[in-house]
Length: 80
Image 1 (cartoon, rainbow, N blue to C red):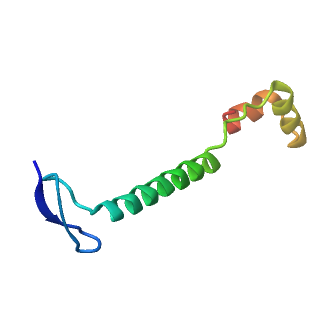
Image 2: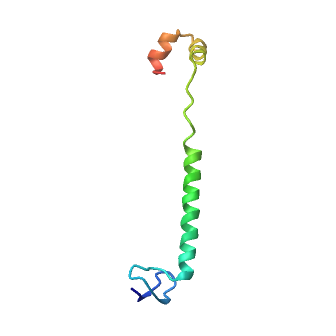
Image 3: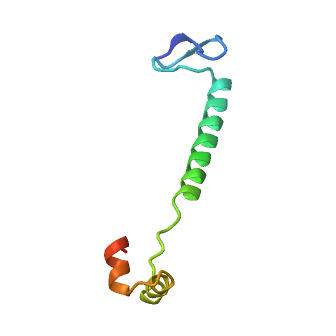
């Protein structure tokens, strides 16, 4: 069903679907900006959430020794 509508960005009068909000020119711009935003959001998330790296038993023991503690004391105190 084609009805007249006004573009929310540029104010141009167009004919299209009842739920249309943008003219064909502005619709392309909106799609591009939305894609750019989603790519940037995904990149920020990738940078923000590095994979959790588990410490090996040897690494935990080395940290405990550097603090002059036993392995058990270190794990009890720091919860690793």
